[in-house]
Length: 612
Image 1 (tube, rainbow, N blue to C red):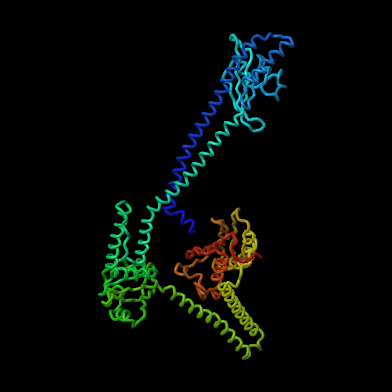
Image 2: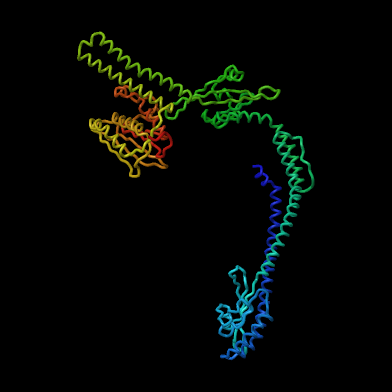
């Protein structure tokens, strides 16, 4: 990390830029110089070969023109010997081969002893063919089998406007490219030396610029820590020197401003420390100066400034005084929200005085906390205990009464005794169901009921749910319909627990649907990666005032009727906990006397539990 910071410093950036500028400039110069040098050497080499070829063409023209079309073997050998001496002695070029060809392209003489076998054979090179056609500019570069670049030139031999032969030259360019390589190495050495000197000069230049900046940075860090007495040295009249002067002036102004705003800073710090709750700041007279948005939302008003604390909180001055002096830790305010239905909100008020240095109390900070939900939880706990006690007491009282009746002589009457025993059995089963549901909820709450997911066929699962309730459906002449989208096949879920959820929903739908009604089980795909299983009925529906608490434990819309139907008031609560354990959620939509739709949304990707 320190190495990365080092390369991000201005000093290193200046050195790199300076070196890169020199490097780019030298590279451009080097490319231009070496390219020009290479072009010049190549041009000189080519011109020399052309001159040699032209001279040889002029000298050998007379000889080739005097050669008869058909000579004796003696005369032919004399011409070849003359041309052989000519190319071997008079026109010897370093690492070059010179061939003289007749008008048919046959080799008459060659300068290399190793190629004497070429004499009498035709040279089929393209440049030779072009030369024999009278084309003079015939040049090309080739790379032989040894990887050596060579220059090839062919010139026609003309005598009295008649082409009587051709001169073929092949010269190695190895020495030329060796010269270019030496020039490259010399240039690279010079460039590295220049870059080294440039780097040293860049370091010196960057140091003169960055040292004042480092001094400014150190002073800025000192100012951030509250040290305003130090000054940045002014080393010149340039831009950096001017910056140092302005910085020193700014330090003085900042010290004065902070001293003047110290009181405001203390007030704002107190407010910011309590921003998660509602905050109200008042002056020493108790008049509100500042409120945050949360306080306005809690108090249901946005015109808090300028109002006394006693009027804002509807409290007596004696209560506010007691809160400020510590006689009371906090007070509870009641806010009633009238949005169609009345709903009470509880606010806890805590007041803290602001002390000015050596001048007593200069203001008050009031902190508001919404404890409505906390109170609701406490109320829910109390109701839960009361409901459990009531649900257990009722069957126990019945069992006790019938047991006493049996003990008093009802057992002697067989028919009456059997009826009493049946009542005791039903009440016992009801208690067992209640305790079982409570234990199930307890395991779900404490995460002691792990999911055992398995690949489950959704259409098959819904059909089986409908089949399980076929008797009850026929008994009330209720039509059941199962619809599943084609894109839904199978998902990973705990089949037993989801079956329990669906059984509860379908059972409730049958209970509260009149004879001849209709129940619909549907499954559709949602995005992203989830499915929605809905149970819709045409039953009596649920009043709107009860929708918010329908999933609460032991909550019943019609308590007497629900208890007579055998319900414990925990079914929907258990269903909600099971669906939450799967990572989904359950919603209920209902209209009174029109029907109810319960929708279970489940993710299709495994995110918890274990596979069965």
